[in-house]
Length: 419
Image (cartoon, rainbow, N blue to C red):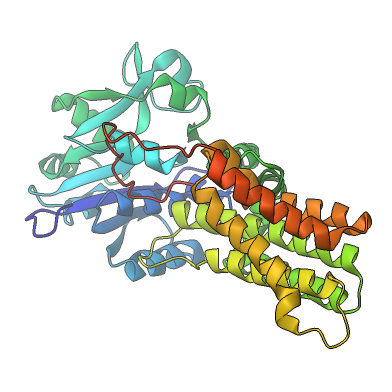
């Protein structure tokens, strides 16, 4: 909400439906991508401007306590109620109430876009929504699991018994009050960007596709593609640890440092391979950190600056190449460093002048290291480094750069970081 507004946007999460037959755990605590569904929903709701999060729950266990701490650290109020009347005492007629169904897992940017606007009930066709676990509205429509309501409707909960299903009751109240339906686009529902998760099996099935969608964007060159493959294969296990991305980054740095040590002992092929693997793992750590920031972080503040890893890897690569170049007795170290420094400097500067389809190749250190490895194995490292630097310089002068079209407006910034 805008600063200084007189009303509050309140979020409602429910934690009462069992996660499958025979399970005592609520759906809200099923885990996807290292966090439970309640945490995913709270991230979206706070990004949508909610200043208070209200949870309907029968118990106040460790999962709920952890969520409370996260919400309060993000600067929002947190309350737990046991029934509809408890909510009525927290929401005034001037407020707005944003409700998410238990088990709903949408892509954050999609949810924020659909919930931005006047009060509405998000809906979808009944023939696909009901089998997927969404509540039926009428013959043709099913609820899509989210709605934005005026706070004045909450007072009608006082007419209901204390054991009434709160989200369903609010849905009926909204429809009776004439709140309009807003359709969720087919491409979101049919492409797995808007899911209802009802059991642990469904959570496990959704995890890989959820992570794949969050890492879909990126350069189509070997290094980033390999990093995305690592993230999709091992990302869920890493995300289950809060510091998993940082640990992976540390492993990447250690590998690069071991590569420098190998170059010191004149093991250049080993040094370059370790540096390349370290760079790929560093990119994977950066991707995981962005996913975590975009989908799981409730707190404001800047993320870990993984871009510094790139500078560190380039500095180590310069040092490894300097150690690998032949030297004469008494030759100053600065002369050995000069050619590698020129090469890496050009690789950093010239992509800005390259067309976008070429820039990714110059920025991909896995490709660069592979080329240098071939030069080492062919015994042509010294002339090869200078030749590659010269080719880069010529390419920067010859290849036409992409020019932004001033007539095309820039898109608005998302409230959640896009990956």
